[in-house]
Length: 329
Image (cartoon, rainbow, N blue to C red; front, side, top):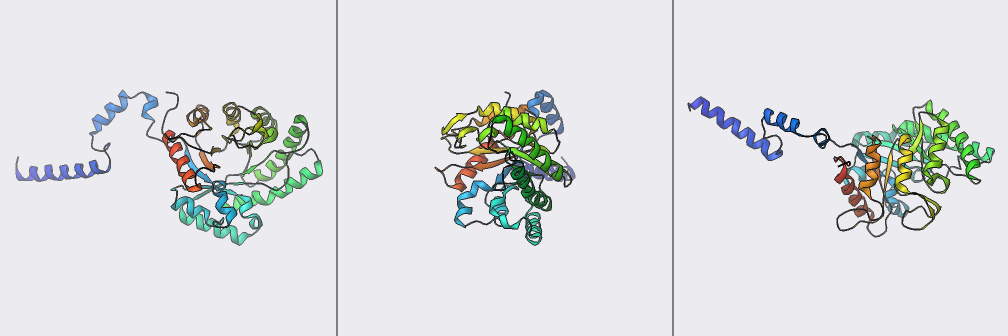
């Protein structure tokens, strides 16, 4: 080998060695890559790509919020810097007096933009029942939600999450919910905001009931935020055995998937292998994957056996375990 060829060989070898340190996949020839890709079944060749992204719901830190150690303005930075999560789901009760504060909303948006964090949605509570059969109360609830639609638009969110609650028979509450959601959906449509309903106790934890309501509304910006854990029709919607009348969570999520514009990954406790002990995550995520879901899945840790930080990280690890897998295998 002449000196020029020898120098070229050393240079190429050094570069290859550098690439090999950073990624074992890069130290291969193009022909070998093409051959391996051809040999892989189609579903296996897609495993390198994540089929969903991970976000963090503010309620995962509800103890810290309630203790006053975390404020709404702190939350996106905590999500990014402590948990490595670049998308957040806000909860209105943590900035209840700021919905109409344009300066606050502008500062919040500038802050999240600077961090590279996306504001995905605002979860709305304590603003009245959108599905109450009382028409006056229902109208008031609808109007109460308008400011949050506007706030969501200011923050760059795609949705507000609402509840379909009301007192009455199944049919009465359903008809009222169709009206309330339709009114709110029409207002939100003008601002390119979705109105998404969570299964959140009562009739809404019946997947068939809620999906039939959404089908009747029949608006492209009115959909669902299926929650893995809230399937107690009567009792506490914690998913841990307190239900007087429970609904099959896997069936319920499946029924809501055609309307899903987000997913809420509820979690409580974990075994030594890192699997959630109340919810079969592989089975639940397969329901979503089979439905063709491609969006964000938000961590919503509610357990009390782990700290909030530990619970969030455990849920994140579990989601990451299945994030690039074909669950049909």
